Length: 65
Image (cartoon, rainbow, N blue to C red; front, side, top):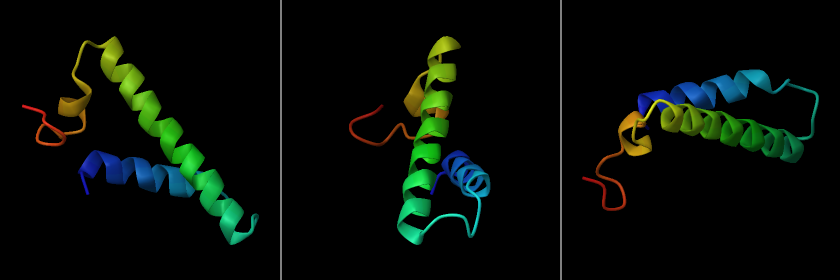
């Protein structure tokens, strides 16, 4: 997994309290937080004029240069 995406996954994991939710609910909250972090990165990337593919080092995914 890309290093930055792994960092965001870990950040999302740390932000969801343990032993507070059922396992299914924990995964739901984690997925929501992870998506929010990725979206925030994308917004910041666009704001700075960078390409999202380059930001996440995914130039070779889905037809990227």
